[in-house]
Image (cartoon, rainbow, N blue to C red; front, side, top):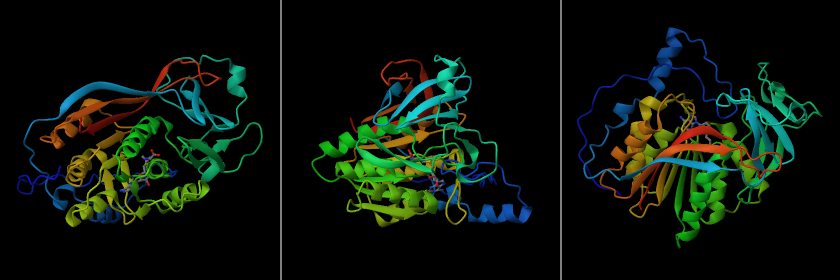
Length: 365
Ligand SMILES: C[S@@+](CC[C@H](N)C(=O)[O-])C[C@H]1O[C@@H](n2cnc3c(N)ncnc32)[C@H](O)[C@@H]1O
């Protein structure tokens, strides 16, 4: 994979947008923060200036074959399934709990009777500014902040976070099963890099399957949750490096060191912050992130997987970027959407498909 290719002279691009929303996927509020000119300038200076970090590589060679559109669908697994959706909400089963959360994609009416929607354990209301469970209502009985769950054989904690998430993005199970397969079939310990790794479920799935894992996230709190998950499953002995750092900074350093990985998962938010205030802005930084990821893929790499939530883009945007980035690498790029299919009260009655995110995946065959 590692080919020395021509890089153009440094190109001037616009600086960071000055966007001040924090990443909202680690349980932190995602509201705009009022900023003074001074604060905005400080943020500007601490951002990773994409073009200055290093210019993009000019790639040659054929673009990988394409497979589009690919809809990777899950009917749930382990302790999770989507029961029903509608009226801008979704009704989900997470282990013992039935939970209602907002879901803008659910434009239709619910299939199940209102009495079923009323008998739930937790509802995200988002109606206070409090941290933690303050933004949840528990109609039956007050619940603790966390509860045990299992997906793909890995134990972890569900968590009522203040930004409506529950500590796991279960639609990603399709990527995690694919990765588990690659790791189990490899016949050697694959090196897996999990960027923006959040609560670490992908890292634990990979390590349990036999991989050596590097998990990177900017949030100390999220790394703490990931380590709690590791301890819950008594997986402390598995080889996982937990790194609290800006993802872009980390991969740029890995590139300089000549480190290589066999599988890279990257699940960047639209906006985020590194631990030292580095700004992540998906539309600005994604091309460089993929470019560097390609450079640190090993010659026997098994895949590079990108997911993208909450962005106003077609899957073709990330698909064509991935194909350009992987020019000359052979293989194929498959892109589309991750969807979860409603599975009814019994978890086994297929209903409507709920779209969750876009993805693009390069594979060597
Ligand atoms: C989209 S979630 C990842 C979800 C996870 N991959 C999963 O499937 O469960 C976003 C994560 O990115 C982290 N993050 C935000 N900005 C970052 C940055 N600049 N560098 C590294 N991590 C960042 C947040 O702390 C958060 O945990």
